[in-house]
Length: 501
Image 1 (tube, rainbow, N blue to C red):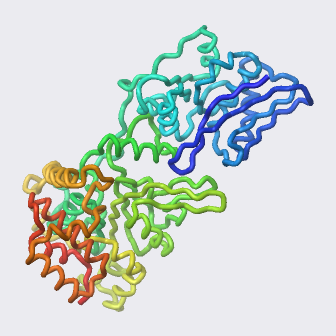
Image 2: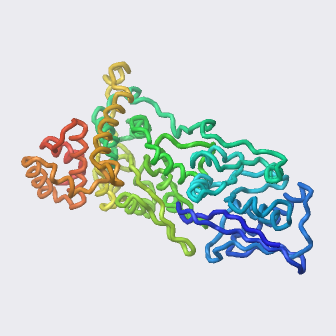
Image 3: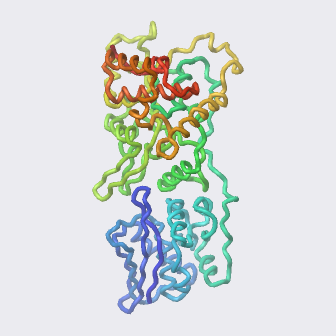
């Protein structure tokens, strides 16, 4: 007796089809799973045995062999429970093998027969939809799977209900997209709640408009973290393509606590004690880390110099290429990581360098020593450096009505992003920060080009810094709706650069 069914495996965000083959034949009773299963997959036989027993189904006193093909691909995760159980039921004659011939299944079985949630349902459903196959997943994941498209999805709560569906004794309800709530990733406050910091707000708007990386320097308690927390509130909404891409990454990481689509840009803020693996990704299964989970969103690193040096240096690749490769002995996985880095730090370890009456005895040397904890190559990848000073008493007296709310700033940011979307239409580039700097050189006015060359020569700016100033100038021009980059845009962009003359 033989039967087979399809399921999936993952290599990063790449979905690989797996053929679950079962043969039941005479011999000493045994239940063997082969095809490079990890411990979780190997243990599925005990979960399946107990699950079937709870339904009143006993395994035959024969030899049962499960082959997961292709056999040279590592199989990981508990989602193999459901496809193995269905193939076994077909081989035993409980259901017809034809019922599962055009099926892709994924789900974990509990001992009482329930089908439980597993990660990676959305990319699995998309893979099944592309091949015109029926997709079977847990009821808890039905709404997540439905984003792959209408029809062709079965979402049983229990294995018994699925068996009855195949026998024609019960009809599982159709999963409908209209019943799916969306997920709001973060609720943010308003910029009008922040007193003072006019220059920092201007820099924040500029960073949002062009997707630029930004570092804020200032003493404790001046609002650096508060400013960054308001950034998601002025960023434009996801496109449907971006939302699906980000949701797939979070689905693979098991980060979707509710079913639905992530519709607002991720905002990840790991603690400075975070390890290299938690930022980059890794572990036994090479799962995505904070950098990939912030894809198309914001990665905020507060107290930047306090992070481990190796963790900070790992940011170099994603900030340049928009992707990150997690290399392990058994896995080499590449995840998308097009992030907007927002960082904050004190000017020195005590935090009060430059604040009269509060400086420590080591000033100003303590400031340069503290800054040296961050490597030059990483600093060179940051577009905007802004000082955040103490808030003045006069700023506390201003009412919220006198300060621009996030909604007004968001409209300007959205307009600038719209200009960029039209400029880079048909290419993978979304913002000026991702653009090829050489293509922007032709948009410089003659006078602006000369000023840029002079600044680069005098300040000994690197080639990377040259193009980052150019991209920042392009964003400044877009915020004013101008086709060409003017001299004042160059001056302002250079002013945001960290330059030691």
